[in-house]
Image 1 (tube, helix red, strand yellow):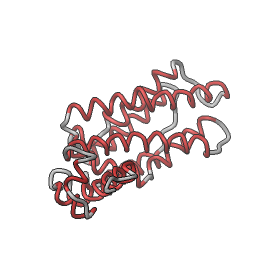
Image 2 (image 1 turned 30 degrees about the horizontal axis):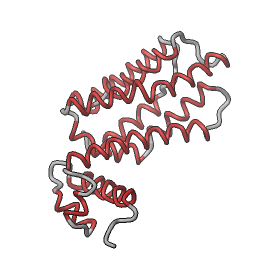
Image 3 (image 1 turned 135 degrees about the vertical axis):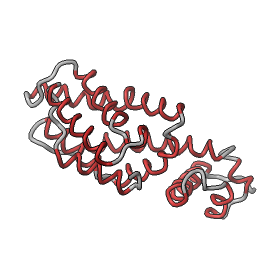
Length: 215
């Protein structure tokens, strides 16, 4: 009788409410009671799905990774361009202005000192995202719009430098230092034959960091 017939929907409600609270109050300041109050849910109802706030955060990280993968696949399917290089640049532009991406990043900044979190993000970049970017680079090599070698390595280097080395969160940098590294990354990718970072992309990334309150 009282059994929840749609556990997946309840899990999603818990995750979505938690994301909103983590953004508004910060992860550390959000309590289980805050989540219960927002959902009008009993402790038993929540603990049936998640044993702790840390477990909810883990679910948020998984959702972020899945949303990122879905967004990337959607952009690849629906972005039209004259060649693979221009398509990749358009995809990066859409990625840089995505409010969804910035919202998740706001939640996860509190975990920047967590080795488990950082290692998971590194693995996702190399194992999940890089092969997708590598395929686009290969298409660019074929159509002549990209001149580089080792597309798989090039994709990995690009994502690791962009997502981690330039990150103001992991290394506590101000906006000027962050921009300097983004512009240097632009030069590095040109040397590697992957000239896909333009000034607009850099400014969008920096603006996204500002909007998430990192500076």
